[in-house]
Length: 86
Image 1 (tube, rainbow, N blue to C red):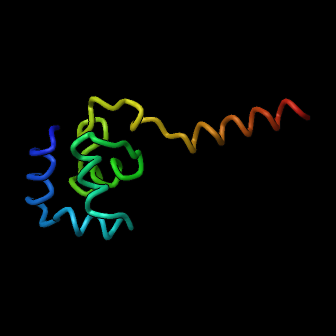
Image 2 (cartoon, helix red, strand yellow):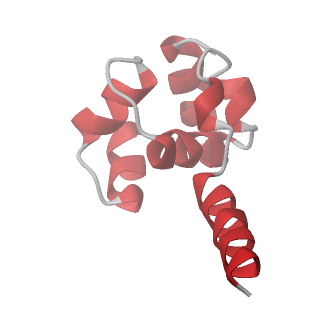
């Protein structure tokens, strides 16, 4: 989705950039920059996607790194390392 489509989808749900920014505890400018692809933030991108009820891969198909879950990968690595030390 491009930034206009994202903004329209948010508007259709009664959500504006300021509201989303408040919910994510960031500035409206930061949310806008992520939507316009001027900066990156997996957390904000996922928040945008959740707000419009679509998968992050649909909202930001040009950013495949948003789809990966770093936390889960770290936890798998921890388990592997712990198992290797036993």
